[in-house]
Image (cartoon, rainbow, N blue to C red; front, side):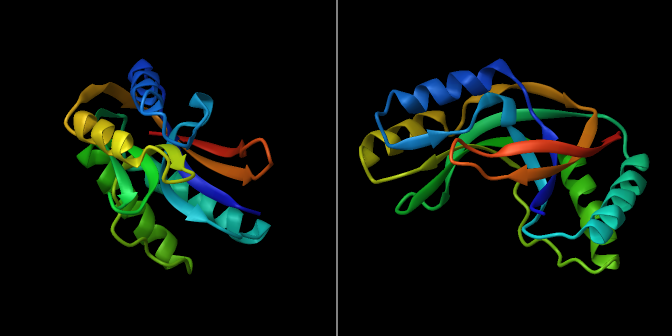
Length: 178
């Protein structure tokens, strides 16, 4: 199965930022607001046995961490402004970075590769073509320092992801409280 570990993120400021990007007229497929999340670890293909081990590791790591405040701030693109594929909102939360590193260590112990260069972000859209690239870049520049708001993170979810023509369908496999 295709799966990931993430924190669901909901804040009205996300809709506002998406609205600003939509004004650019660029060809972007935006994420459904009900699916916005911060990915801590992605598993492109995981079997049931390994999924059980991941769930146990996630529970153990979350027991060592409490709820945390995070600030949504700024917007940008991956991999670069010359080749824009992903639009994102930044997330500032040292506690979440610590949680991700602990999770990465626990998953490495059970045989998974470590994450490289974890950068907390909320993917809000995928650039489809170069249409209106200059307008999109102008929007990125205008939003790069915007303070969007504060959220509270109280749980981490292990989710299955099923890709469909209408977009991904996420199902919670397990939920671990912080």
